Length: 242
Image (cartoon, rainbow, N blue to C red; front, top):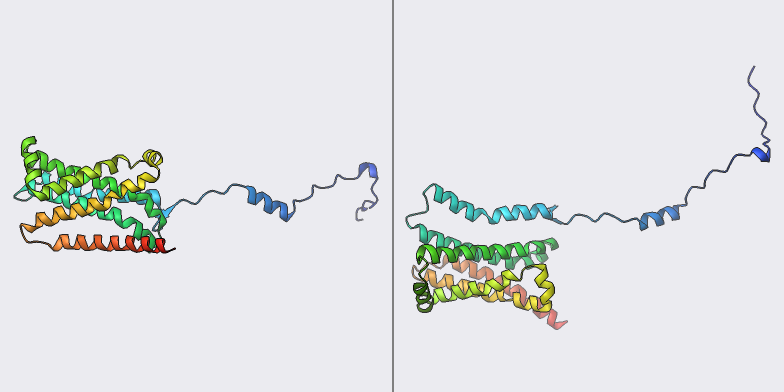
């Protein structure tokens, strides 16, 4: 015999408590909108910015690692001082051009986060110019201050190279965020010295290569610099017309 079903009539005294109303879709949407969202990690070329910075840092250390390897294997050419001096000077110019290419490159290939590595590029340029100067002062002149002063005065390519080094010092010192806040708009004005620095560096390189009548490499660097400056002039002109 089937069990008897309970009567549908329920006494008010024992009526069940009503279930809590489910939140409306509008309320759920409002809560979701109010909840903080985790910011997406910045990326460069599809990889996290931090990873890209580490890889770029390692790449910038390649010239130094190569010199150390060549020194350990006793393969620094027949004239190690000349090789190291010229190689460090070349890499100074290369890193300066890489620093200048960041702004147009981020616009051309739509990678705004590239701007986050520009300071690293500039500091590596200062690092390599310090090595360049060290090889000249130490291994070429053996810390002979009088001979160095005479060289700077008498040889124009040494003069412009030394001037470029002196101009790089304030740019390296003021590369921090603290100095950016202190200087305000003057920071951008000061760091436009990089255009003069690269010009002096190219002139230094041209004069150095003139002795051997070898202008192929420095010609390429000059052409790259001309393109980068043309992009900046065009951008300035467009902004001026608006």
